[in-house]
Structure formats: structure tokens, C-alpha cells
Image (cartoon, rainbow over all chains, first blue to last red; front, side):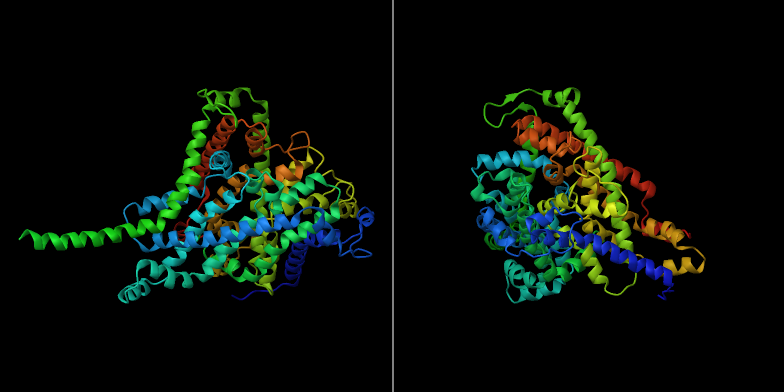
Length: 277
Length: 311
């Protein structure tokens, strides 16, 4: 397509791009600047755009202000275990839906699609009571175990991916005497890698960022995750802005690093496997 | 005569049996999880909504009383419903318009498009808690950098989070920072529109604005429908920002339905009442979704229809 370039049009486009980029990235910058300012400098007017004397040890002080080491450990356990569970269970179920014709399959698949729409508000109360009955309240189990049973959106996404893999591969493996489980495990799992990276990233982000789950299911401070610990810290020490900002940066770092690493997969797959499927 | 026939039949049936069970074994994890963590809780919540069910103590069957109390005799419910509807009326159009504008901006042919796409999307990947700590400082009334920048433009200090008029607006503004997912879906839709259509329109003298209304909007309408439904559902479920950024205040101006349900369940420990309210909210969401789909035939075009008619 030939693009007729007008100078005012291109100035407007680049102006808009730069302005919007600044709007999206500035809050991150400002949080970092806030984290490394000396306390009195926070309240100067007009605000300073870079601290006169950057206090990098604010991070260490913030870390020591609460048992953030414990919170980090809990967050890490929840994130890692739920991601492993989600990858295994969702891919297994997706393989079942994509590769078998069985009575009730279409009905189950419709139920799966409908289950995506069930709002969390309706299930959070009975889930709390269920986990309470199981004795799981104030343990990390409610945040981990459900992920081992697959999630509709991830199953749907992986199923779409498996559908695009030629069935001849399965047939060839079957001729060589592979069982269906071996076909899933040895052939499809490696081929699914790009989609698994996407699912793993989304599950990691969901588990790491989750606030409402920990808020409802955890009581004891020793079980807190980082999000819950930071939220509590905010309510208790609303004025300790440098520590709040420093902890916010730390909370954002793993998602940012993951995003930059897996960006190619996220952007591509969200585009190609969006609702156009 | 019987035996030779029966034996292969049995062998066949046992092989058939193994083949018939395997698919169910594969999908079993989700079916079990669905029963245990979605359908079971959903039905249980309907069940307890007919009870006076304290967290500790004997539940008592009271029929529809929770529902009648909520509808006829609960000023906080009416108020929080109004707050939620007002919020949705701002949140839904703001998110859709901003997401669409950003997607159109990214859809221009340009240098470093990957960088800009990532920059617009990156706030969507951080936790709601981080979002709140970042924005409560940016929006601070006295020391906030946003009020400082506005003062450079000659605009007086706005009490973003402390005034009942501005607090709901602030929540909408903050939510726009993580508009990235909606934006990416619009972008995918835009990319699938054939470039030739724009060229043809251009040749027949249709301007940019005309092209937007005659080509982009109709061809994007299925994607718009999808984003509309998901954004409406998201508006009703908004809880983290209300809980942490404004704590429902000031003077309950951001005390949304989801927060009132949360309080009833976990603050007042009135599980039956909260469950009844969550079911009313579910019914409301379903009704809205159905209405959107019903009316969608009036404005959603699928490509096959449009190809026939020339703009």
C-alpha cells in the first residue's frame, strides 16, 4: 500500500505516540524517583524530577520494614506451584478436547466456554466456605490447588493451538506403538511450547498479582503474599512513601522481567489467537 | 459356534472400552475442578441465599427474605447499585474509546511499532496493588505531581481521591492505565481489515473520517461487541481499586456493589445475605449481556453482509 505522507499528519502521529508513551511510562518513572528520594524532598513544591541525592538504600530499609522476605517466599511458592499445575492440567484437558471424539464432548466444551463468564464475586463466598470446611483457610492451598484442575481460558487457547497441529503426526506415532498419553507427552507438549509460554506467563502474572484471593483466604501475617503484605503496609504506614514506592518497584520487577522476556509470544499470540481464533 | 464369536467380541469391546475411557481421563481434571470450584460453589451459593447463614452458628431457612430485604429495604444496596451503574456508564465508554484510539494509532505504518505496542501494554501486567500505590501518590491532593502539572497549565488543585465528585472519575482514569488487553484485541481486529478497502474508498474520494465510519467501525463491530461485553462484566466486578484506592469513600461515593457484597460476607459475616446479593448481581450481568447481544444485531455487521453493499 502506498502511503501518502503529509508532514503535518506525520508530526501529529509522532506527537501523539510520544505523548501517549510518556503517559504510560511516566508513573513507573515517578515511582522509582519517589523510592530514592530523601523524605523531606518528597514534600517540596514544585516537585523535583530527579532526587538531589539519590538514596538507593531506601530499598533495603523498605525491605526491612516488614517481613517481606516471608511474603516473597509465599508469593514464590504460590506462583511456581500454580503455574506448573496450570501448564500440566490445561494442556492435558486441551489435548482431550482437541484430539478425541467422545459422547458429550461438544456439551462439555460449551460448558467450558460458559464457565469463563462466571464472575468471581458469585463464587468467592461459597469458595471461602468450602475451603473453610476443608481446613484450607490460612494456608496457601486455595491459591494453588484450583490451578491444578485447568482453567477454561487456557484450555481454550491450547485447544486452538493443538487443532492446528496435523493429525498425521499422531497417526505416525500410533503406528510406532505410542500410547495416547505418550503422544500427548512426547509429541504435543514440545510442539505446544509457544502456547505454553503464553499460558505460563498469564498464570504467573495472575498468581503473582492476585490480591483478592490472598485477602480472603489468608489471615495470618506469616502466610501473606507480597501483594497482601504491600496492601497492608499501605493501610498501616500510608505516609512512609519512599518505602511504599520501593516495595511497589520490587513487586513490579518480576512481571516486568517476564514480560520483556516473553514479549514476543504475548504480543504475537494475543493477536493471532484472540477472538478471531 | 458361540465361543469363537463371543471371544473376539469381548476382546473388541474391551479395546473399545479402553479407547472410550481415555478421552474422559484427559478432560477429567477440568470436569472435577469445574464441579468442585465453579458449579458446586455456584449452586451452594444459591442454596445459602435462602438462609440466614452466619459464618459461625446455626443456619436458618428464611425463604426469599434475603432477596426481599435487599430489594425493598436496603438503602446501601440501592446506593451501591447506583454507584456501580454510574461507574459503568463512565468506565465502559472511556475504556472502549481509549482502547480503540490507541489501537488505531498503533495500526499506522511506523518505525519501532513493537516498542510502542509494548509501552502501551506494559501497565496491564502489574498488580492492582501496585497500581493503587503508584496512583495514590501521583494523584495526591497536596503533593501529587499530576496536580503540579495541572497548575502549570493554570488549573487549580483537584482533590482527586478526597472529593465525592472526583473519586469515581479518578478510578476510571486509573483504570485506563491498564487498557492494554482491550487495546490488543482491537488491534488484532484492525489488522484483519483488508487494506484494499481503504484504498478503494480513498480513490472514490472518501475522506479519513468517512472511512472510519464506513469501513473501520462496521468491520470492527464484532470485535467491539466482544470488548463491550467483557468491559461491562469487568465494570461490575471492580473491587480492588474500590477497596484500596478510595476504600469506598469519600462518603461512599465509590462504594460499589462488589464491595458491598464483600463487606456483607467478610465484615458482617452474613453469608446468606451476601450470597443473595451476589446472585442478584449475576442476574443483572446476565440480563445486560443478553440485552447487548439482542441489540447487537442492529449494529454488528459480519463481513459477509458488508461485502455485498458498497459504501
